[in-house]
Image 1 (cartoon, one colour):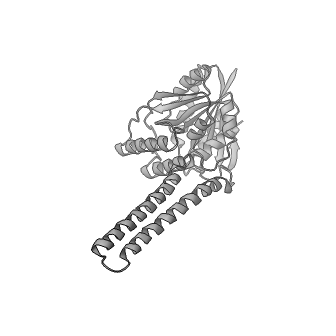
Image 2 (cartoon, rainbow, N blue to C red):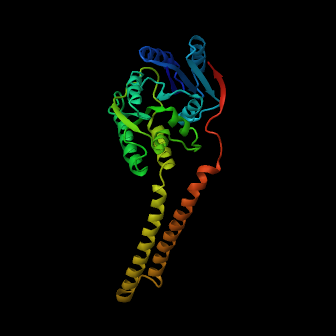
Image 3 (cartoon, rainbow, N blue to C red):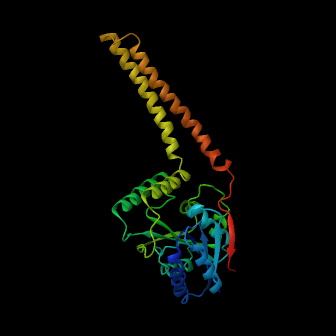
Amino acid sequence: MKTLDIVTSAKNESQNLVHLVQAIEKVMENEPYTWRVIISENASKDDTWEVINSLAEKNPKVVGLRMSRDFGFEGAITAGLSHADADAVVIMASDLQDPPEYISIFLRMFEQGYDHVYQVVESRPGVSKIRNLNSTLFYLLAEKFSKGLIQRNSSTFRLISREVRDNLIQLEERNRFIRALVSWLGYNSIGISLPRAPRVYGKSKANSRHVFSYAMKGILANSYSLLDFVGIFGIMTSSISFITTFIFSMVWIFHGVPFAGFGILVGSIFLGFGLVFLCLGIIAQYLSLVYEEIKARPNFVIREIVGS
């Protein structure tokens, strides 16, 4: 019989976890898979860890990993993936906005030979217009700057094969964005257009500030386009400085200047700024390569494990 691990992260989700496990159990009753749920508890301020302990005591299919501090969603999921060893692994949120019923859809595509099946969010019921606008802008920029590694409206909710999981956890990047990393691996992938479910319990942590921070991390960790822009801006500024110097020189010849040396002064200022930005752009290219590897800290630290 094939095996399935379901990996999720939980921070202040005590109200949702019991319902999540029950919903997964209901779905998996009709699936020919041996399964378990791996929940990474991410420094919650409520009784989330106590709920995970209770679930693990009652249900041998529940495994809990307690992080030593908040390592973010990506760090917590990476910790869960490090403990997953099934034929297929599902990555999902624990707030029930990733409906467990979709797992069956993912499994059917997995059985057809796909190594990577992900949700493409077709609608977000109950989400504010500002939140929808944030998401639209993020995916527009992320898809462009990452050269397609971050697919438009792709969700973290996905299934990956054991082979993809094995290669994914070997990627030791510190600024992780799992959606892009899985795409970078290049396995046989398919996106399925499905709506998100509204949050039932608790409050969403995806406010505008969080979304912006997460989006910038995803873009910067998977694209050097912004660094290229710095260099391009330096070239543009340098060009403007030469043009400005030429124009002021012509004005000086035919009309005079407000004071002696005015044109040279303005042109020199523009030229100086242009050269500075140009040099910063070149240095940034090298610095970006060093920065990714120089801080060799682990992506997560597990404080405690419960369950089999």
